[in-house]
Image (tube, rainbow over the protein chains, first blue to last red):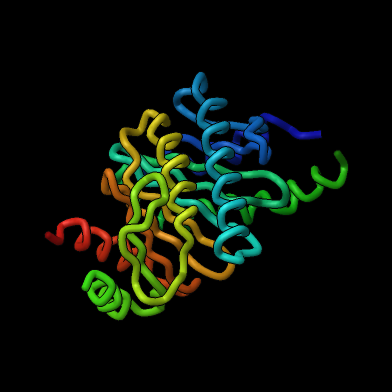
Length: 126
Length: 106
């Protein structure tokens, strides 16, 4: 069973120095857990992030002979978003523009590494 | 001429493999000599960029994708899309800088 409160606490730990939203979702964009200042739009952001991930994963395999997509970094005028896969779920962090891309990626790596074993257990039991 | 220019750009950044300029429909305008990216990657970017612009974070500027065998940096310069491809050891910061220079070039 997924302990949602514990998961939310883990995701909220990433909320330092400019990270405004942390999401855990399935590859189809269904939200598994979230920590953000604007919970009403979590599902919406998760769906968009998952869709972008799927597009690039497919595109990369088809045109670049890539076996796997490891990370996606999105830079917008007013913020940044990073997505990576851990076990069979996706982790997404949203940050303000003040967070350097490298730092955002490092934080994402830290969260995905931390969640990898628990998410593997979840994948095998569901 | 454009190809020679883009080849020089590729030589500037270590581990860079190629550069392509296309419009958002995937029609290629220019590319460096080495064929590294299919124009359909531009269509992938165009669709993802449109979605990213709906995240309430302003307009999308760039998307960087890290694959197991390469890194792809794509920058919006409407109506064009710049695609830069490097090996997995490529320096993303340098590629983004190069992309900015290309956007400013006459």
